[in-house]
Image (cartoon, rainbow, N blue to C red; front, side, top):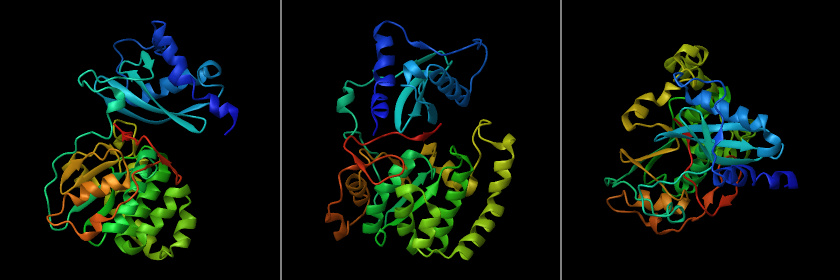
Length: 330
């Protein structure tokens, strides 16, 4: 990593924090009246425009882009990509103030004490648990969750029903629709090859290489994609911007019924035995433990120990020690 990229650790964590200490939040609303209702996308664009207009002092001269924006109470949590790094920041809903960190005053735990100790919803037990992972295929945290999912899938795929499903809207351009359809059809037509394909895809996103390496039947997959596109109006909904969610995000209705059933709002969302659960940290071992607790009689595979490290978000095969609770979605 160059020194220039190394220095980008400073801007949003220290420069903005310094402004806070000085008694001022960053004012980013430019020319908006209080009566104007701002969408999350508009606010995200305002933040990016502000940072890029002041990138020499705020972002080390690098250009910022928006990875995701999600509503959290009375503010928006935004994930910014500056250079090769991503940063969490927050912005008020009126688009006036940007700040780098938020503390939940409703809990007595300090920020360093939260994370691994998050309570998980009580999951009903079954002889063969049903595990659904909802993602957007290009969401950095969806990719992280898929990397968490894979070792557990290989361990328990013959003992539990396990599959990857898709959030009913996209945030990462047309490529996400295409990849969602590929993964949907590989699971439908050649499920035995899906684990190998996904293990390849999460490394660098080179789907052409992964299709070849795993010998996916392209004709069968192509026919499935065409039929699925027609059945769920995927391309038609993408081309009809009037149908986009909040006018911002194309709909992807392949699993819309399940999204509505479980209240899926973003990527990743994990559902075990019809119960939405939080996996924190997002490590294979933690995920395995939660699934194994959902068996009436856990199989012997549950005695195996998997990695307790969380995979990095986005593409790549590294790990991170802190775990992550980030996501893409509204």
